[in-house]
Image (cartoon, rainbow, N blue to C red):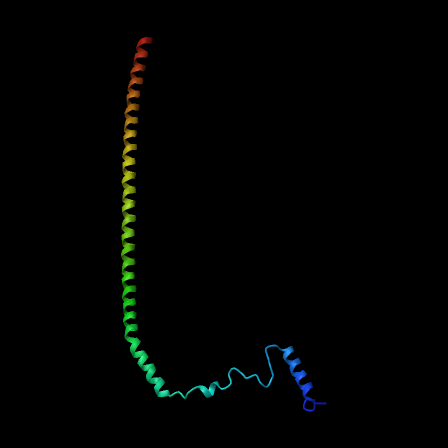
Length: 142
C-alpha cells in the first residue's frame, strides 16, 4: 500500500513518526514557514529615492569626516615633530651625562696624579736619606 492509499490514521502516525525523528522539521499542514509572506509585505523600493537618500547622508556627514581626517593628519604630523624633538633632547641629556662622566674621570685622574707626585717626593726623600746614611756608615767604618 502506498502513502496515498493509506487511511488517515496511518498518515497521521507517519507524520508523527517523521516529526519525532527530526524534531527541527515539522510537516504538519497547520505549520507555516517564518519567511512565508515576507516578500509580499515589503513595499517596492524606488532606486532614485535610495540614491537621493544616500547622497543626502553622504553630504551631511562627509564635511565632518573630512575635517576629522585633516585634524588627525595634523595631529600625527605634530606627534612626529614632537617625537623628533624628544629624541634630540634625549641625545642632549646623554651628551651631558657623558660630559659629567668625563669631568669625573679628569678629577679622578688629577687626584691620582697628586698621589703619584707625593709618592715620588717621598721616594726622593727616602733616597736622599739612604744616601746620607750610606755616607755616614762609610765614615763610621773608617
